[in-house]
Length: 219
Ligand SMILES: NC(=O)c1ccc[n+]([C@@H]2O[C@H](COP(=O)([O-])OP(=O)(O)OC[C@H]3O[C@@H](n4cnc5c(N)ncnc54)[C@H](OP(=O)(O)O)[C@@H]3O)[C@@H](O)[C@H]2O)c1
Image 1 (tube, protein in one colour):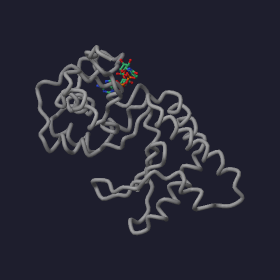
Image 2: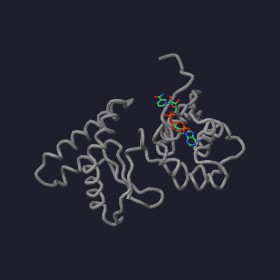
Image 3: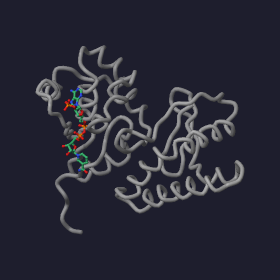
Image 4: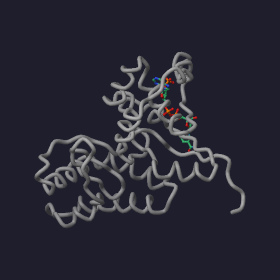
C-alpha cells in the first residue's frame, strides 16, 4: 500500500482504550478517531456510571460524558459521540473550559478492560478471595456457562464483526467450548482450562479472569 490514510476509525472508550495502537497510528501522521466513546447507543449506563469517571466529573463540575470526551481529546483522539438530545449535543461540545490532570488521565487509563462491544457484555463482577485463584477461575467459568445464551449472542456478534482473524477465531473457539461443556456428564477442570486466556491483577488489587475471547470477569 502506498497511500497513507488521513484517518483511522476505531472503537475507543475507557473500557477499550487501544493505548498501544493509538500512538503507533498517530506517529505516522494519521488522525485517530474514536467511535462508541460512551459505550454505544443503548449501552452507556455502565461507563457513565463508573465511579472513577463520576468522581472526576464532580471535581470539575462537568458530566461523565464530558470527562470521557475530554480524555479522548487530551490523547489527541478525535471523538464522535452520537446523540439525538439537543442538551447532550450542546454539552458534548463544551469541552474546552477544563483540563484533566495527569493523575486524572492515569486514573481513567487504569480503567482499561480491553472489553470491546455493544453494552460491554464482556464484563462482570463476582467476589472470590485473592488467595484462591483456581477457585476464582472455576467460579468465573461457571458464571460464563450459566449465562451461555447472553455470552453466546455476544460471541457470535464478535466472531462475525471482528476486524482480525485471531479475535474471530478466539470467539468461535469460546463458542465451541461453551457448546461442548453442555454435553459433558460432569464438571471437568482441565476441559474448562481450555477456555482460559490468562488471569491478571487489576490496578486496584482485584483479580481478573480473562477468557479466550476477551470475556473478562473481575473479582
Ligand atoms: N466506524 C464504525 O465501525 C462505527 C461503529 C459504531 C459507531 N460508529 C459511529 O460512532 C458514533 C457514535 O456511536 P453511538 O452513537 O452508537 O455511540 P456513543 O456515542 O458511544 O453513545 C451514544 C449514546 O450516548 C448518549 N449520549 C450522548 N451524549 C450524552 C451525554 N452528554 N450524556 C448522556 N448520554 C449521552 C446518547 O443518548 P441521547 O441520544 O439521549 O443523547 C446515545 O444513547 C456514530 O456516529 C456512529 O455512526 C462507527
